[in-house]
Length: 182
Image (cartoon, rainbow, N blue to C red):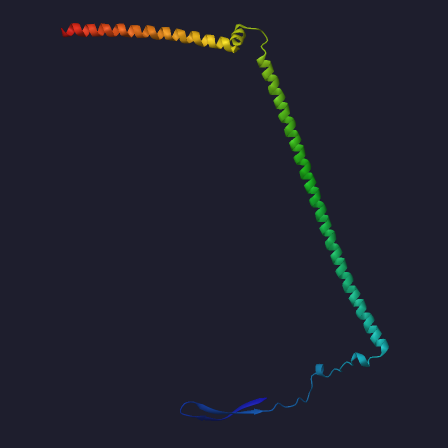
């Protein structure tokens, strides 16, 4: 389409323009891509050509499906190998933890046995000494009560003596103060 401006006239408010639109001209030289022959529809093809095209289409389809199958097989193989590796790791961790638990239990048992033996050795003196005899004497509850009673009696005697001594000192002080006042 050709566009041309003709008769430009100035007006009070604006410019007036006449635009001529001409129809497009037919192309004398047709580009090559439009010159190619049109393909005949499949209905017009001979039976052999149609069979060959259908066979080729089937081959392409089967090849495409085979590629998809191979890719899916590779993916499933990767998944199975990853799962096997994860199972191995889980088993290794489980074995390590069971070994650690067993070793901890055996160590604890051995330490307990050693402590028990040490306590038994210390509880049974090699020689009977005077301290051991005194220990056995104080283990009897009746003897413990008797010893407490004797200690309390001795403490009461000492307290009475202190009270008497303090009373005598007070009486002396009172008598000294009475004498000084007089």
